[in-house]
Length: 72
Image 1 (tube, one colour):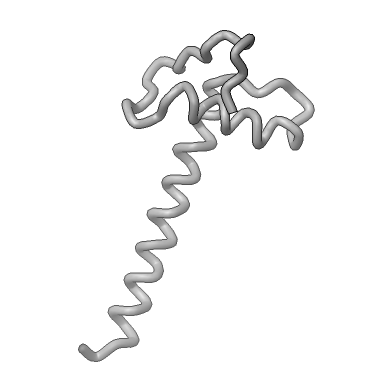
Image 2 (tube, helix red, strand yellow):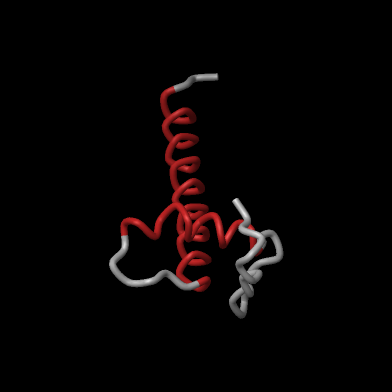
């Protein structure tokens, strides 16, 4: 996905260590067509973190349902 002519994307301040510049770049590449304004690395970082929070919420809900419906 990396374009040799484009400069490396700088990670936003406060960015977790597991988010790479390549992940930021890929996120912008995927989501930019859906936004009228140019996405910034901080926007991509927020999208990535929000997706992670969504997955954790889904996991918690799924675990609660399994624990309540199962008897053992």
